Image 1 (cartoon, rainbow, N blue to C red):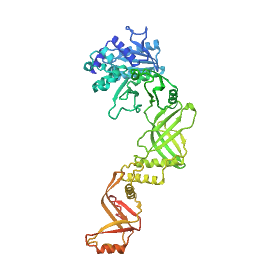
Image 2 (cartoon, rainbow, N blue to C red):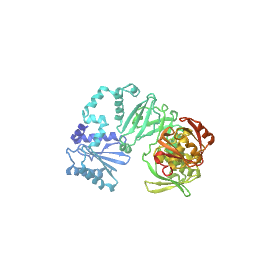
Image 3 (cartoon, helix red, strand yellow):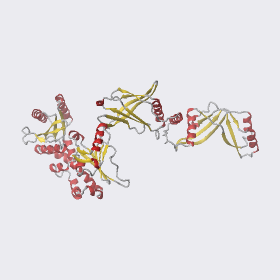
Image 4 (cartoon, rainbow, N blue to C red):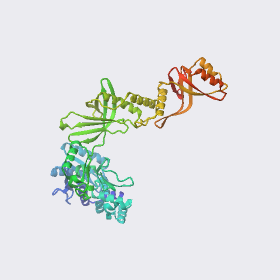
Length: 569
């Protein structure tokens, strides 16, 4: 890399002009990059132009044999820019330098850009480090202008000779040769990066693949998948790639649906009657119409759309201060934004009509997904869904633009949220908050009786609520000390407390609390007291006597760490 940087600094003007010409012709293959006759320097290559999407573009080449761009070089640049504007009237002028501007020169160049801002022409810079970065991906140009600059890499390639491998032979070659094959693909058009994946025991990855940033195309033969990613996004935006396809009637209907709705479409081999493309990955495969399937997946912005959503019904409100939406599809007739937060207990999909349709109807789809979600978040979601069940309005507020986007009036939704389900969710959320643990709701049908018992006891302990119970069964071990205690307590009843010094509470297989807990009754009675007293009196010291306590007041549960009995014992 350092040798390439140094060689570029030493290149003469003539060679640098030719390098830039070929580099831009490769970087923008459809731009018709050409010389500007009669206005260039002595070698005829100092200035050349092309047609990018933004309009006519001029590249001006300057090879300075200096360390820093000084007053003389700045004047040369300004003179060249003025001459190019007069002769070519470009929409974009790009200065190509063999060295990098320092901080001071960058500030000067920014002032130069600002001075032309009002003319409608854009001024850009393509300096030494940018050229070196491009040459790393362009083997032929690098070898032509800077032979032996990366000698070690070249020798290794000559030994391996990856050029001899065909796509069908790839699965038989070692990993290092596959890397060379990928480099061969990249050399065809360095605006792209490539990835080859071979199917293992789990089989090949499915097509169409999940959307990925920068993914433009993917092909598979059932055993391996090759993907093409955008590397030089700027070049691709200025000189786009594309394809032309001839479709049967059913294929035309799918294409029209894609254009209208933005929904991905898959075309079968029978629907493809003609195909031509300049997407490198596809154009190199020699695809024959009628022998391959084809999928079109629109590329969409990945940046989130932050909204505040309010569920409103009369005086009730449930507000989500921040929900991130993403554009999931966009067509000429409609576009859709959706929540993609995996932790959110519901999904919202808004389908808005395009302005051209003049429709004011927004379709809304909301799906409940409580299983596996934090009970605290589910409690809030359940409150919002209860409003939806009764029919409510959604107020959409843009956090980016700090303004209300509108209100959507919704008819009643059906979510099957019973009062028992709401109480159960509230119980779990309260336990989660008080004990500062995360409780995720299980799948429906995966709650057993022990889960209900544990949840009821923990909820009563952390909230101070009481637990209804009809009977408490105990095993009382007779000792010398308590031999007369039971009879005295029955004759003169006092409050009743029992402490378990060590216990483990689990919910849905996960440990929620480990420690002591107890139960407390303000009033109680002994079931079959005469029989219980007789059995206890007849028992020997050390024997266990089963007894049943009848609560006369609701039972309270406490965790021993909370010391809830300190004021009542």
